[in-house]
Image 1: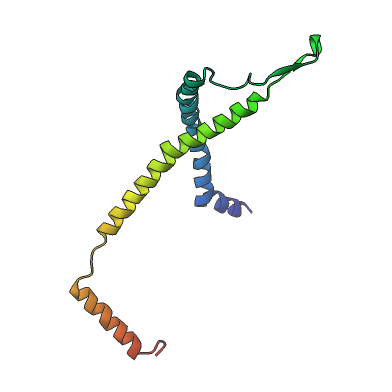
Image 2 (image 1 turned 120 degrees about the horizontal axis):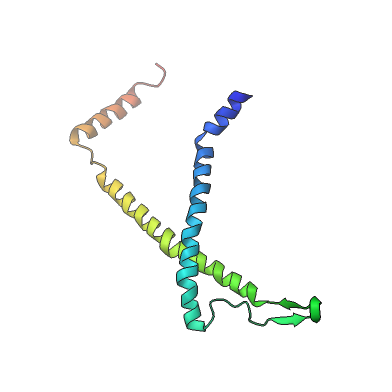
Length: 136
């Protein structure tokens, strides 16, 4: 039972998952800083408010039982979600895709072309494979 647990823990996928969770937690701070310190102030400069919480807000009740309903908070959450998605896509996904495409191109260029000798050896191998049936 303990050996099975050791095998499970030492599997690469478990370790990769743990590293991914830790990196994701650290990266959250980067994305939040981008959204809260760059994108939200830009929205505040354009529209006058960095959030829409007070939009369409109204009070229910009186005195100590009064409550403020803020439907604009949903709009703020949606806008923040879109800002995070935009930040991730344009600052992380697109550059990583370009980097992967560049690496793929370099790998394809690096593959050597077969020499005449290699082509001849492949042809001989294929001829032998046809002449000598497998298993004899």
